[in-house]
Image 1 (cartoon, rainbow, N blue to C red):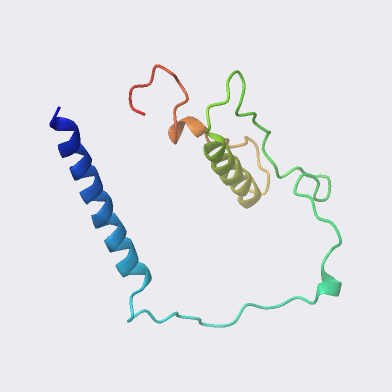
Image 2: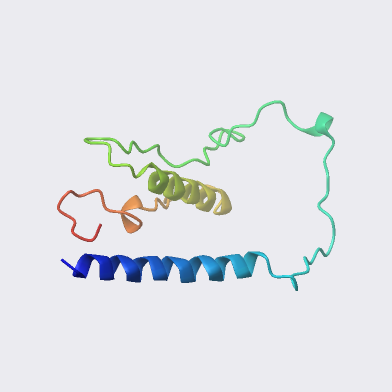
Length: 118
C-alpha cells in the first residue's frame, strides 16, 4: 500500500517542475517584444456587416461538420473543435482545392472504453 503515496509524490514533483519552468518562461524579465511594424487598421465602416466562410463568392471554404457525441458523449469536444478548425484553415489556405483535408480527432484522443492508454 506504500506504492500509491510514492507514485503520487513523483506525480506531484513532476507537476511542480513543469509549473516552475512555465512560470520562469512567462515572467522572464529579459523578454523584449519585437514589433517590426504596427498592424494596419481598417475603419469599421469598411468592414462587411456579415461574413461566412461557407459562401465566399459561391465557394465553400468549410469542411464538413462532425458530431462528437454519437453514439456516446465522451468529453472530447476540444479535440473535435481543434481538428475541425485546423481542417478549415487548411482548406482556406489551399483556396478550397479538392480534396478536402480533414484531420482526425483520434490523433489527439481516443474515446474507446477499451483504451487502456487513458
